[in-house]
Length: 260
Ligand code: NAD
Image 1 (cartoon, helix red, strand yellow):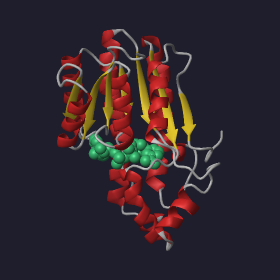
Image 2 (cartoon, rainbow, N blue to C red; image 1 turned 135 degrees about the vertical axis):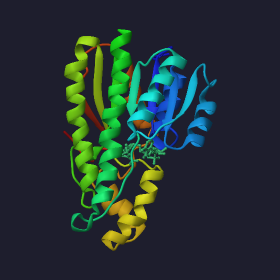
Image 3 (cartoon, protein in one colour; image 1 turned 90 degrees about the horizontal axis):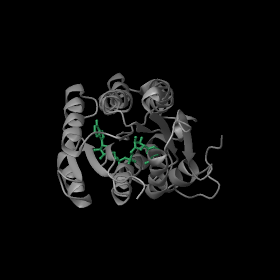
Image 4 (tube, rainbow, N blue to C red; image 1 turned 60 degrees about the vertical axis):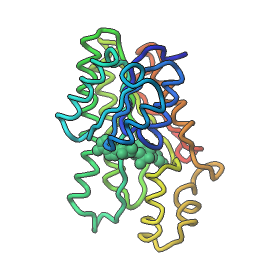
């Protein structure tokens, strides 16, 4: 049990990568808060993972809404006994060529990834600093935190930005034993990726099969998708690492698509 009785908030935890991280943390003894835009799915996921109000909690939260984030994190801390781990994971994808990218869609994407990361970080840090028992903040970056792809201007911009935020949190949080790190996955077969396959096929004028083979997995060492379990394992490693020795870092899990 590597997270016994730790309280972990995972945003975007009603689906995909976030859900698997919440499941892994619960298995390792953590109390998990499922924070998601979709209230019914958040409740259902929380109920799947433990006893609501005791070992889990579903929280309806739009991570771009300051009041909802502050209220949700405060409720989680009051119900489950503080905040030890934050996984800022909620995310969306919008693909289009730059010359046709609508400004409103650019702003929507940046808000979910960057405003969301800032607001949840600030709310969690206030609890972590007050509690005085340290903490771990994990950002869900991407290979796109290090590398670019066509059609993904705001996503690549936001994911690069998270590395900067993590480094600042690492510096400011150190005195309080709060660490911050970024996970950078390659393509993982979740609803977020399934939705963009037809979009990319349309934009690039190729088949969905070719989007997978010739775009998404082209540069991996073995043509394989990264799995939600791969990413959750790394989240567990960062969440349970016990000192400031490992902070301000970003680690790529991508079947060798990107090698640092
Ligand atoms: P997903 O679509 O399966 O899940 C995303 C979850 O985030 C959903 O439950 C959704 O309701 C929630 N969400 C969306 N907007 C929100 C908001 N404003 N407030 C709160 N919750 C919100 O996606 P996923 O693939 O599991 O992606 C999770 C994270 O992993 C994202 O940050 C994504 O950019 C990142 N990522 C994904 C991949 C991949 O290939 N799937 C690769 C690298 C990084």
